[in-house]
Image 1 (tube, rainbow, N blue to C red):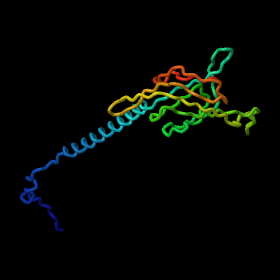
Image 2 (image 1 turned 180 degrees about the vertical axis):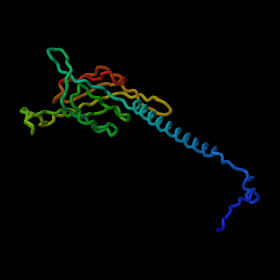
Image 3 (image 1 turned 120 degrees about the vertical axis):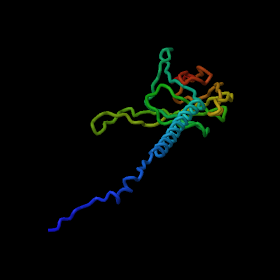
Image 4 (image 1 turned 135 degrees about the vertical axis):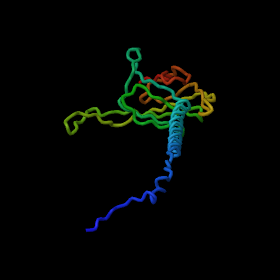
Length: 206
């Protein structure tokens, strides 16, 4: 029986023992990663700043006249809430139409930056005199038709610089107003200067 003897020749493997071991540094990959993170961070900061700046500019450039709704009860004005009504701008392309409003005591009327007047159409919902039951037997009121009134606001405009980022806007001051009398009994200017959103500029009586 022949025994195979494994011999390890140190001389043949000497070159491997003396070869330098090279460690590759991960620094370039780390630098590349940090560069990508930095670029993304700057992009996100710029994006959110732009969105925030756009919202700020929109608030500064748009102007609204606030109109409150009232009824005259024995000589005393009381707030009035309409179940449903609509308001839209007439003849002014930059006056945005309003959606259907429900259970509101006031409305914001956007003013035109390019005109000295704005005309609005109010559509007030009139409900059926007798409610009808739904499938569950609950009585529901449905809109029978709308009664419309128009209101025209005349005002002065004075241009001013909001900021280099936002550009120019206008100061508005109401001069007078006119209206029809289908639902509206009377209307008057309470505060002529258009400024704070919380200030009521017009009182409308029904």
